[in-house]
Image (cartoon, rainbow, N blue to C red; front, side, top):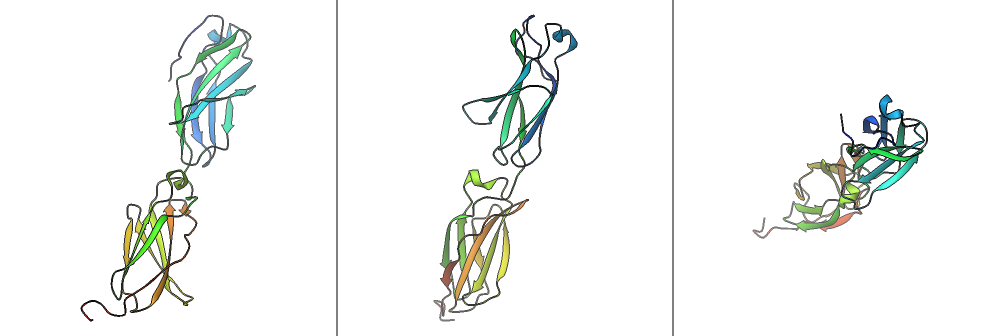
Length: 212
């Protein structure tokens, strides 16, 4: 159980049993119980003020809550940690603040595709694909892998391979000699795939340096 940060006999004690848990990738529900009966003797609670901020931010936001002992905050950042504290008010003013508690919104699919994609022809049958992850604030979770889709130019069908989340390069092998391939990427979280990059093109060598 958390403690309180200050005390006055004329204002409420701190709310008790405060908890926070995510409802979605953009919302968190905060619940609590009123101050103890002894603290209520100073007068009825007129409102609660919820203070919160995204962990790492420099400014704290607040919202007044009139009635009830729960509140849902919407419009939060995806897969982000938020810190919360709560203060009860009576006619004399604010009471004791709870200690801070922290909760994280759920992850979601990345909202942007991998960045800085480049292709390097390595041989007559292989092309190396290189890339960087989506911007940090667009990852919306832990990147678990990358999906690489590739096809010969003009072909309707395509092949797909998936890497792990730590990779930044992957060699496509067993390609046809002297052919143009089109390649695009998506980033993955446990929730699904990001938007795809544009199609990038590279051509395999007709022959290798050793003449084979």
